[in-house]
Each structure stands twice: as C-alpha cells, then as structure tokens.
Image: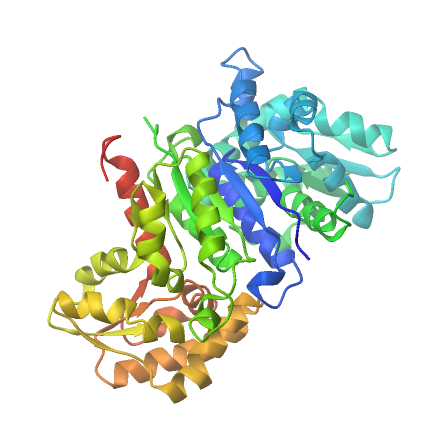
Amino acid sequence: MNEKILGVLGGMGPLASAHFMVRLTLLTPAATDQEHIPAVLWSDPRVPDRTAAKRGGPDPLPALLHGIAGLKAAGCGAIAIPCNTAHGWYDEMAAAAGVPVLHIVDASAAALREVTPKGGVVAVMGTAATLAMRLYQDRLEHSGWQVITPDADEMARLVSPGIALVKANKVAESYPLLAEMVTILAGRGAASVILGCTEIPLGIQAGPYKTLPIPLIDSIDSLASAAIAWARRGATGT
Amino acid sequence: MNEKILGVLGGMGPLASAHFMVRLTLLTPAATDQEHIPAVLWSDPRVPDRTAAKRGGPDPLPALLHGIAGLKAAGCGAIAIPCNTAHGWYDEMAAAAGVPVLHIVDASAAALREVTPKGGVVAVMGTAATLAMRLYQDRLEHSGWQVITPDADEMARLVSPGIALVKANKVAESYPLLAEMVTILAGRGAASVILGCTEIPLGIQAGPYKTLPIPLIDSIDSLASAAIAWARRGATGT
C-alpha cells in the first residue's frame, strides 16, 4: 500500500501549502504513520507573484516548471497545487508534468455539489487574477451553476487586503475583512461561497466563521480530499 | 536573498512535519511570500517505526538515507528532521548528507537556556527509544543540566499512548495523558520540560496547556527557530 507519492507544488503562499499538508494528514484515515500518504512538498515562496504577473509583472512559469521538474525527479505520481491563481498556468504545467495534475477548481466543484445543487447561485472569492482569468466562473457555469463575485471596490477594500494579511502572517486581522465579504455575498443571493484562494480559509478560520450565514467551500480541503482519493485508487489510476 | 533551500526530512509522523512547516512559516519574519524560506519537505511516513527498530524491528536507516539523497538532489543546503527518535541515526545521516544537519537536541537546548539556567532540573518527555538512547540526557547533562525522565510505568500508561493517539489523528484525546505527565514531572522537581517527541506538542496544544505548572519547551518550534537562524546566515554558513 501507499506505493504512490503525492507531489505538492507549494510556497504560494508557504502558510497555505503547509496548512495543506496538515489538512492532507488530518483528512486521511490512518492509525499509524505508515498508513499516511507519502508526499513531497516543494515550497518555493520565491515564485514571482501570480496576481502581479497577470498585470505585467515577472513571469512565474519558469519557477513553476522548475518545481514540477523537482517533484517528478522525486518520483511523484501526481501533483497538487495549493494555489488557485497558479492554475492560470495549469495547461503548461500539466503538459510538462507527464503525471496527473489535480485541478483545484474541479476539486472545489466536487465539494460544492454537496451543499449547492447545480442551477443554484454560488459566490467565489479569490485573487483579482483568479477572478479575471475566470478560473472558477467558466468551469462552474459550464456545469450549470450561476456564479457571482465581489465587485472591484470590494476586491480593493476587503478581499485583496485580506489575502495580503495572511501572507504577512496576520491571520487574525484578515478575518473581519473576509467575513464582511462573505456576508455581502450572502445578501446578494449566494447559497454558498467558494474560498478560491488558499489564503482565504486561513483568514476565515482565525475568527468565528461558523456564525457566517452561508456554507463555505474550502479550496484547501477540497484539494486535499482529491489527493486522498487519488492515493486510494489503483497504482495506475489518474 | 533566500538563495538557500532548507530540506526537511519528515513524515515521522506526517502531522508533526506538516506542523513544522506551519511553524517555520509563522516564526519567519516576512511580509510577502517571497521573503519566506524556500523549503522542500520529504514526507515519507513509510519509514519503519524508529522506536520499534530499537527493539529489533525493521531498520529505518535505508529509508532515512533515501530521503536525505532526495533532499540533496533537490538542492537543499541544510536539513532539519522534525522527529526526535530519528536522531538516533544522526551520525549516519549527517555523514551522508554532506550539508549541515540541524540537531533537534541542540535546538531544544538553545530554547531551554531561556527558561532554566544550567544546573537546574529539566524533564524530558519523548518516545521510549529517544529516552533509552539518551539523546537528550547525554547532551544536556554534558552542558550542566540535571535531567529527569518518566519512569517505565508512566511511559506505558501516559507518554507512549499519548504519542500514538497523535499519530492516529486523535490529538484531543492525547492531551489529558500528556498533561498528567507534565504535572507529575513538575511535582518531582522539574523546572521545565522538553517536549522531546514532535507528536507531544501537538497533543499538548489540543488542551489548556497554558495552565500547566512549568514552562514547556517545544522541540518543533526550537528546530524551526534553528532553521530560520541558518537561513538568515550567509550563504556559506553552517
């Protein structure tokens, strides 16, 4: 058992990928060390900022492909990337990987189905780049959901600062901004909200998030569940 | 900056090494992703049980050296091992690594100095193998501390089950066992206690540990601090 090694392309940010490793462990049914999933985490926080790149900043792709190559060299049989925005370079990474790359939007959609039937309204919170690239909107609308997102003012006032605070290790200060955004989206008709940036669950969980009015779909946990399902399948499965 | 990559030989257990990555991140002064420490975590929970090996079980050394080789191939400039018991194979790993391997006992001793002056009495909790190998006792007594440890009955009743519960993802159930042990050691004269197994801080932190009667030295945080100090030194430093 556990012949397969999971590769994790992380560091974007480092707290999110470390937290992903914690959640991967806690969500795995296991009674001893040896029943857990072997994994290699490539945590390179020097990857140029993904959101800035979409505005003309340095290209993160070479650093992303360097990480993919490192994980392949370590013998990984699939790769998970706990950074939503990095999925803007998914096709290039998947082509280079030669092994399955688990898509965080597909993983989140699987969790979404549990709380909001297709046809319902789901909100997505993410970085400005994730939303501008329509990483979630295109895939979810294609599957039949209606998708709403924060407007530009809300992004500038609540979501982008909330994400930046987590990246600066200030998770408690991030909570009120992100919680206000969830409440606004609920008031606008969302039946649930996808936390589509891996920093957002960390900020949300630093406060009384269980009091928020609609279910939250955690893209970190969704990706961890997809990775566990991969590890549980036969050695040749994808 | 941040040219150096930290290697983390983990998976022993996987929750401890994931938590080490979280603490490494949170203890690093950083305002953006790019200011964090690049790291590769080799989390192989299949490494044969270190405590069982000291009683005649399968030898973990080949798996440990395989991990060291993987971290070297990834370009790591130093290696941290968030498993105290694995330090029973420290000399063999250090010889194979060719880069500095940070010693968790030295890291914990640095933290101990902050709370208990040399000459004082410090207790050490760890696996039966860590204590039998005298990983902490020899180094700390050599530096002038007096060291006390749980007796065989306390190991069997409190410490070993507390560690096993964390490895089985039952951290809350681990707390009362480990907390009782801390209280017993305080009653026996310990001025502080080193949590010398990386599962123990996880169990202790699942309960009201701040009410315990003596300071706790967390070997995970101590090792993370040593790694951050290494990363902050010049590129050629050890």
